[in-house]
Image 1 (cartoon, rainbow, N blue to C red):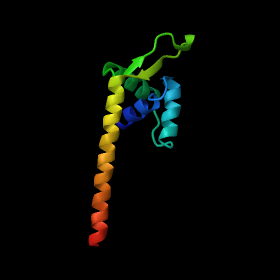
Image 2: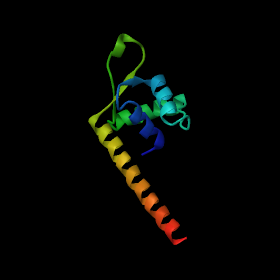
Image 3: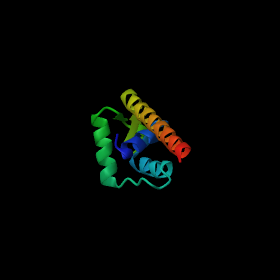
Image 4: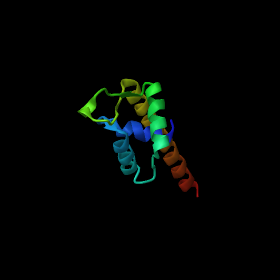
Length: 103
C-alpha cells in the first residue's frame, strides 16, 4: 500500500472528512512527514474510491466540500497493512536483537 494511501485511510477511519481536513489530519498523524499536495490528495481520493476503499458521501453538511468515509473493504485493507507493518517491525526487532547478542 502506498504510504499516503495508508494515512488517508487512517484519517477517515474514525470519521468522514473532506479534502483539506484529510490533508491537515495526515500532516498531524505523520508528525509533518507526509504532506499531501492537492494533486496527490485528489488523485489518491479518486483511486481509493475506484478501489472501493473509500466512498464519497452525498450532501454531507450541505456544503460544497466532498466528504469521504472508509468502506468495509478499505477498513480491511487498512487492517491488513497494519498487520503487515507489525509483522515487519517484529522481524526487524528480532533481527536487531540477534545481531546485538552476537556482537
